[in-house]
Image (cartoon, rainbow, N blue to C red; front, top):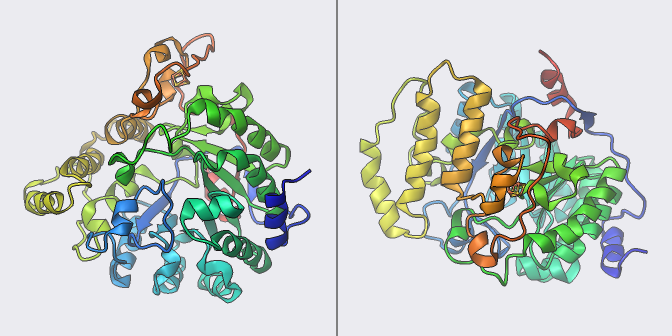
Length: 441
Ligand code: SF4
């Protein structure tokens, strides 16, 4: 029997029976993703406590707060196509639907072969006319930030009535035939609802569900995380397997991002995505283009774009030092160190020797991101685990908050090094246009 909050959500989303899935197609084929990413500006109408960009959203003076110009966004997208070979893109804000130019950018992207996804909290999409406008502009799909249901959701995002608007928007997406996928952060208040969210996904016809750990990324590195607001891995594990079973039985793709393999049942290890597995998910971002759009100049609304670095060209840090120092002084929370690391990422792409295979290049980047950029750490027990070479371990701050005793070393008869050791068995759901290039040798 459904919980009252799920019943209400299903009614609001007009989803009393399971929706047929017709937009995307299942496949076991895998290639390195060609999906770019663009942060348009850190302006948002909600305030999720686990948001990676909470400080920039709160601070109107932050150089990344305001939305950028349409011309700048177009130039970034053009570069992602021409230089990085991207064929799809995640358009993020903050909240991209608040940006008046978004329809023009989606239209432009469609004209240059870049299929647009918006990552949205859906408040603006509670208007069906707005959903229709996005569809007419050429939007491929929506990645819905569904962080809970009912009062739990309203509490997480800090706004009464937000859940009702989000369910209405889900109804609108179904009515207009716009495909959608769900992102749910495994925050402590949402844990008791993950099975309900799985059922809602099935009933509304979601193509994919992503469960994400509450990660210590970006503005979440600045002291907000604690043993009060971060759930223990064991709390997550207690409910996650059941939700994954529900989705698997209904043929809905499910992914779990940045959580250790040993936190789910063996049958669900194929759904776990650490940095090493990310490049093989077409709905995740291409490290190469990502390393460029993540640079401060590409994200700050008033800054000139820095050109992508040509292979073999060494990055000249000199001209960047003064603006970086100014930025770090004015906004100590973003820090000079982080920007240096991002430039290091971009420089790595530019200076890699041509003999390194593209797959190895992405795996080097994956290890660097896990270790240097996001601070993941193996704990003592990981040395006994056969999956340690393809697992990032624990969040950097986790052992300090909760200790190391939840690690459960996996025995496979020998250590594995193939990042797709588990995920190659996972069936993905992809857009028919992606299937075409994915299955072409
Ligand atoms: S490497 Fe460590 S954290 Fe990862 S699955 Fe093995 S024991 Fe768990």
